[in-house]
Length: 95
Image (cartoon, rainbow, N blue to C red; front, side):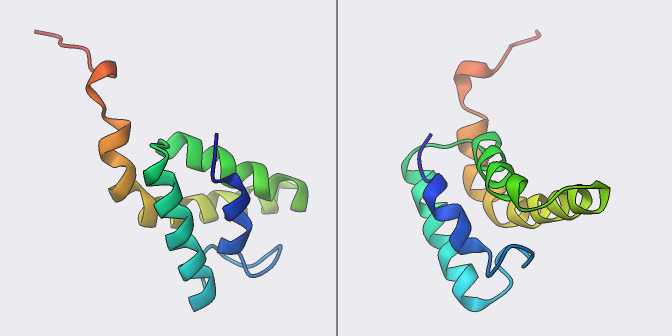
């Protein structure tokens, strides 16, 4: 996978929400561009974000917080990655 080195720029700090500040949003756009250019799927992006956040906390509250960050990222990224996720090689015709 590529682009994982850009994930950290989307967070101002270890506990800052995804793309909260303007500089974080700019970094998120750069990350999104990289993901599109490298044909990453949403599942790849989610994996990269979770991998970035995993060593920064633990416990039930932190897990819920991580899930919230994933939801925020999904709102921004999924519309751009949707076509990649629905590529025709994985479609099954049930007719």
